[in-house]
Length: 218
Image (cartoon, rainbow, N blue to C red):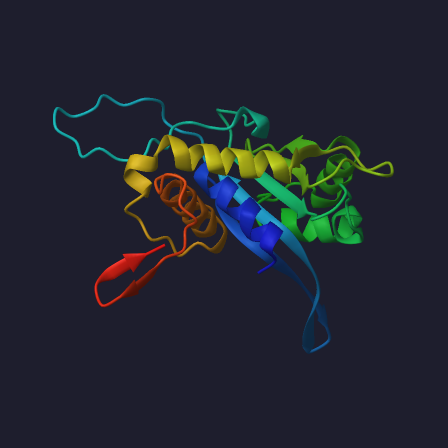
């Protein structure tokens, strides 16, 4: 998986999304099928049911109720993100601009709506709400601002994504410091925080030492 895509996937999952990275779009040609493109990130989030009364005794865990305001989530509707991820400047590639590709993605959950009309509206406005109540949005994640005009969409910088993840790690450090994560992006950020705190606790030493016959030398 692309590094930037892995970073965005970790960010969306912490905000309550189910994600599919590098989602393939398959086309049929007679008896054969072929992959014509893929969507960098496809994410779904269901609205929360609101706060529930806490039981008297509950194990202390991570707070998963906080949502990054930068996502602009509609709290009462199912949110679907069709995302483009760029390591460089903001841009929307030909796959996302292709109405047929969008129509294929939308058909997975449109429940009989006019998929062509929805795809056209999505390209024109960057967001559309289906009759079912689903909100579908185009979101671009990139390092730098756009260098050319792009279709309407929400733009979230990769710098913001990194800051959010780092802030999450530091806020929940007392719990996360004991965890070994398999997620490639979030796990690496957690490892960096462990290394940073370990180096800070060495009180100005060089961070390199040699042990010979039980004697520690720096």
